[in-house]
Every structure is written in C-alpha cells, then in structure tokens.
Length: 309
Image 1 (cartoon, rainbow, N blue to C red):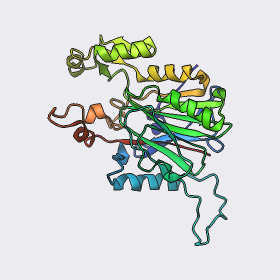
Image 2: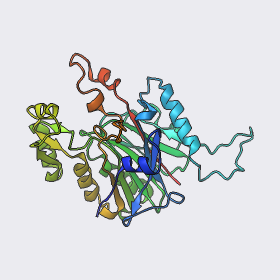
Image 3: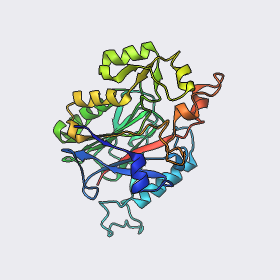
C-alpha cells in the first residue's frame, strides 16, 4: 500500500505556517525511516520566496535561503574535529544544482562542481556532503534513497519528463549497485488533478504511455473559472498516478513509496494563506503576449532537495 502524507498537516502540527522549508522522512516497509539514521527529503515553501535557478543568473535569495537551511541541518559526517589547516570545517553540506530542461537526463555528482554548467533534470550522488537540488513550481519533485548503499537522488518531473524517476532508479543501480527492493521513493507536492486540466492530445499521450488512471474526463468543477477552462482542456491529469506507474514499473515496492497529497496550486491553510509556489496560480493566466520565460519569472519557484544521513 502506498504511504500518503499531508504537508499542510505537518506544517500545522509539527512545523510552522511561517516555515521557509519542510524536511520529511522516506518510508520503508510501510513505516517512516528514522531521520537520525536515514536520508530525508524536503523543499522550500512560498514563504521562502523564489528559488529560481539559471547558470547565467544570480539569485541572492536562493543563495541566502539554502545557506540558512543547510546551516540548520546537522551534518552527520562532521565529527567536530575536522578543521582544515586554515581552521575551517571542511564538512559543510553543499547544495548541488542543475539547470532544468524538462528532460529525462540524470547526472552523477561526486563533487559539488560536477554539475556546473550542466542541463538536465535529475542528480544522484553517494557523497554525504552533497545535497542534490532541483526546482519545481507545479511540476513533480521526486526523491530516491537507497537505505543500503546510501545513494540519494532528486529529480524534476515535468509532464514532458515523466519517466525520469525510472531513469533515476536505473542510474542508481548502474552506478552504485543499488537493489530495487532497497530503494525508497518520495513524490513531493505538485499540481493535482483537481487543478490540472489538459487537452485531448496530452490526455491521449498519458493514457498511451502510462496508466489509464492518470486521465479522467472533467465533469465537476470548483468554480466557474475551472468550468470555462475545461471547455478548452476537457481532461484532468494526475501526475501522481503517472509517476506511481513509472516507479512501480521500475521495481520500487509500494510500501517503500510515500506521496505528499498536497496540490501546489490550491492547498491553503485555514486562514486562506497559500503554502506553495504554483505556475498555474501565479503565472498561467498572465497576458499571452508574454513569453514563457517572462511568465516563469512571476511564479515562486521552490527548491526540492534530498539530504543524506
């Protein structure tokens, strides 16, 4: 049985509505793995502001927030007696980025500089000092962790890149000798079928290439805006079901998968405060005269990362 969680509930109970990020456990055999011994996955929230990343851009907010997060998180390999000759600890966790292109390209990082200048949508590593980091805003963040080899990976799965989770599994098997039964997977918050309307062409693509459960005809609506949208995009698409199909086909056991059920577009706290950044909510309805790149600068991009213990 698939493990399901609500990040909204976690924030209301354990964390805070003002938190800039959330850090969560992987699941194995239906139970949460202890954070003190195993890798964790997480992402920034709307309150952290945009974590947009391009190699040719500078995002001071991203640099500041990631530094704050990695400073707060205890580095498990730091003994406290590991200063270099200059008296500075060399065991700092380092975020490893990649510029996204909506692909199924997965790269390995042995050192923090290994991804410099690279484009792709997934990063795997066995280095405990590295924190693979991708960005998302309605697309699906996916995380992998092998509890035996300690390999980890973070992946951006846009609709065009659906299937990258399977590529990540194969990469970990090929590079680190991972066994499918030992790999844990997490599907983070993304736009839900409640808000994701698609045309017939995209619906057919997902029905043909993934589980038929991915697609359903839109018949009920939350508001008039969605009803009007469905006249042009008459189907609802579940990226959760599509990626569950990919993970199961890659040999990942259901009881080793956890899914965040929150929708980045519509999930709110009781006071009406939005929790996540969302392309559809923040940018999709901007004037058609704007380019996709211009629209993307209007949304709050989130950083999604995995940290090894």
